[in-house]
Length: 114
Length: 116
Figure (cartoon, rainbow over the protein chains, first blue to last red):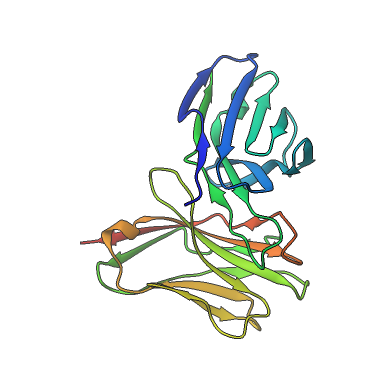
């Protein structure tokens, strides 16, 4: 069974702090994603990566960066946290090349920026 | 314009009855895929079922089936014999273009409550 693990379930950070959200998957998936989920706005893609050291911007990359140094790990970085980045963050992974390949999600990290 | 529309913000169903959750989509690409996910209160998104635009038959996975009406651009999820554990948010999502397109377009979800 695919497992996507997010390092923290809940995080509370102060405005201006640099925040790291970590995600690890154990199924050798090529693609990894970071979404944020807000009530009334649904899931919005922040960044995704299709290979080690490769990344592409999603729909809302401003204020975020990512790092993928190893295939199994994809980190989301909030360079200077702001209150409008308070949200649920979901990491997902998927295999490349299948007829269809559903996203496998972690349990989410609920981040509060005060 | 919304590419994925889920018109029912909230639904109630009696345990053991069937329920249909609506999803309409908008795309001009002949190749696309439609996904349904479940998100219980624990937060994890769980993949339920997939329908490809070229699939001849409606997808089924256990108690889940997809009522795919291509001409109407609808892909409604049918849950048969509802269980209390089906209470959750349900999201419809679309991949436009071929399977190697990595981005999904998401609906805003439908909250389902199963009553005992």
